[in-house]
Length: 140
Image (cartoon, rainbow, N blue to C red; front, side, top):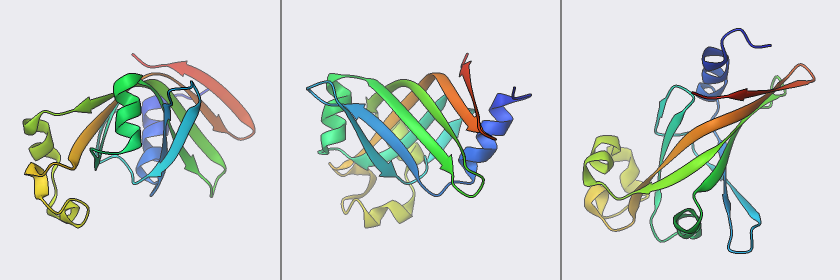
């Protein structure tokens, strides 16, 4: 059993260069996509990513907010899956707060452009795998 889930899982997350996010399509099937790490996280409960607003994933999250994210440390063969909900944030304040100049390579119109959008994941529960063992946990 993990002594400190937030510290153990937070350390795993912070060391990954790729994460996976999943949405649910109109037929109820999961859709998974590799993403850059979150641009911001608050503990292991709340995560933020920037993405393109006209994407398939944004449409899916607007129709069904159920989501799953996964971080994998392939070097030590361990990982964490978090289940919760994904919100599409249109708020200009959060978009500007999270904007970095390096994002201009993805969004030619900048923070005020039409394609730049933020998604926010809020975790409710998770499953951690390490040392040939899995452990479920709730997130408060």
